Image (cartoon, rainbow, N blue to C red; front, side, top):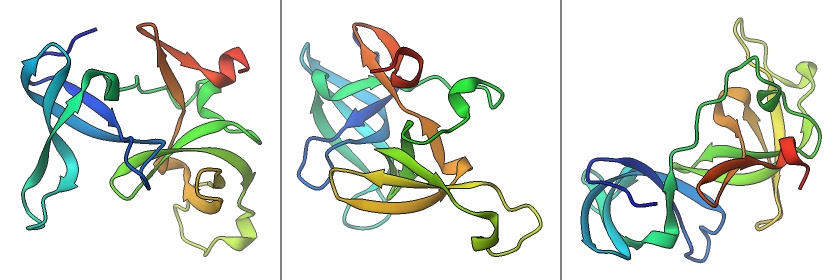
Amino acid sequence: MGFGIGERIEVCSKEEGFKGSFFAATVIAKPDKNSYYVRYKNLLENDGFTRLVEKVTKDEVRPVPPKINASSTLSRYCMFDEVDAFDQDGWWVGKIIEKVDEEDIEEEEDQEPMYYVYFSTYAQKIAYPISRLRAHLEWINGKWVSSKKFGY
């Protein structure tokens, strides 16, 4: 699958410290059949203002995953569900390990449910509000595949 100029995509980083992360970007040029120049949505140049532009290979990009309806079974998280958590300007793959007890959350009027996500690559457990989580989907042979739906 090829992407056109102006198309929104996600870039999967292969750099040490960023493995298992996906960053939103837009294709700005296609210099050859195996690569793209992309402008990241949230990553900035060293000046802190200019959005980062980078050349990436076609095996590092995928379409933006579809939004899953909040009433969908894929949006209800259970123990060990694979999810993407939005942190440090990108989506990081982890697993739900528990729901945060409501007593442990500071009382606010519209407090949303929170879940602990474990990142095996970094051996870290971090709590996230549900609004910063999405069901993890893999782009396989031109189709989105959910580990939750297919049990792998």
